[in-house]
Image 1: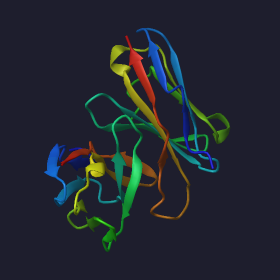
Image 2 (image 1 turned 45 degrees about the vertical axis):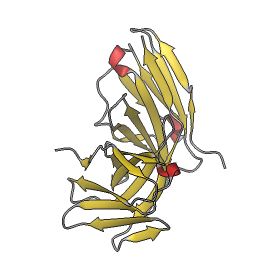
Image 3 (image 1 turned 90 degrees about the vertical axis):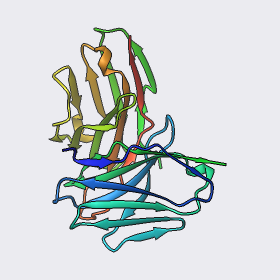
Image 4 (image 1 turned 135 degrees about the vertical axis):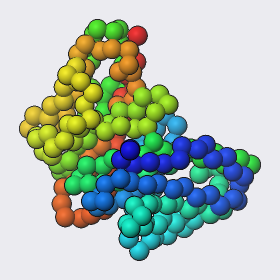
Length: 108
Length: 116
């Protein structure tokens, strides 16, 4: 079983749609969780950290379920500029492990 | 403040040659990570330094790969001899060590390695 698993997609959605990405992790000792965004031929950049109570940043909402070892990212009112690959990242003792990424394409 | 920098940005070498990639982390960041993304695949962990010590090198594919971080500052990743399957983008990332659970890792722009 992979340490971090994501649905690779691709997700093709129209502008304004709501889209949700899921991620599961295998190590129950995982300590912190992140969503990174990677644009084509660019480096990954932090989108948001994922807090135990769930957190929201504008159109983006992240949720964590430790019991089910599951993380989610919800994007509301999708914009063309949201098109990218979204990476689920899990941190165990400062070792960061990545999911394969979910590719999102937002179309006009 | 300078971010994580990697050199070179691109490298094209022949099979059997040696290549050395360099990463300069953000000043003060004791954690330094190397990752690799092969075309069409996920980003894979290679190894993790804390200062000059290798905390975890479980992701290193084989003994053709050698990573060093002398003095706990910049790091090099040497591939010798390079094989075709080593082609990909090699990313370096750094972060602070500390008690904060949500310490962000910052990435360099990567080195695109092509072995022909």
